[in-house]
Image (cartoon, rainbow, N blue to C red; front, top):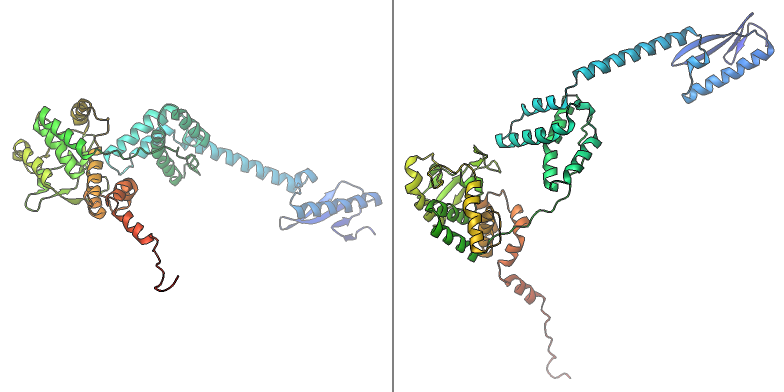
Length: 406
């Protein structure tokens, strides 16, 4: 090939050889520091071929191939400037990134939930997670940090307690993602631990009668009336101590359940829905007992009170000072005082009361929870009648021979 002619990306000049090629959408020209000898021209063609192949495969390193190129040097300066800017941005982001403990305070201030719930979250985050992560930045906390902390805590407490500890942490990091502080929540793949829910453990009818009788014999009548009403209505303990006289409809024998008392504070019911319940004879009798103790104090006064005349601050005192001692005195198996609610439900179902009615009394939105927790009492309510119907339906019919046949 004659000098001054070009082809296949190689241009042979009088004193040099040039390579022409397209890179990143633009035509590039680089001069090789080679004399235009036949050997060097062949080498230039091989280099041009290799460059085109590397560009096609996306592996071409411009700076390595042409280290003294103006384009390569300019590109290097651009990359260095970009890296410096990224490093500066990273340092600025780190300076803006709050400590975990600081963000906990920020997040807690945004909560729009019941005070008892917020107090619980504050305790869990402060007593465990802040103590665990100390002065770490929010973005420094990784999945494994949380998983290891949860695994260690599981050696000391129940699986349910560990799962409860994760609830506010999940919500906190979800807020951090929404605030663009972290790209992804490190709690996302920390799974809840499996735990076995304790079975419903109600009292039998005879046990219930023994308990209320002993209450009436041994304690002030306000204690007896409280538990008589609890067994007769199935109210949650938090709803019992929050019940006001203004919620009682004596004429219709009904009560409006619209509040609960948790950790010394009144709030809405557990389901956040008010409901009206029927008051049966034993519940009415318990209210009559309480009339002389609290009714004259006003319609906004709690119905039930401590023997000292003050409202029950929570369900702990009556449970520890009266309920558990009575069970021990009677030789009954120790169970939660909350089982007054389960006793009401199971006695009603075993008596054949419509499950929908029982669910309404208990404050369930439908019968789903009822069938989930009380299925075996519902199944036993018919005393075998449904099973006998199925026996009849499936009974083998006796086929008699026709008359005159052998």
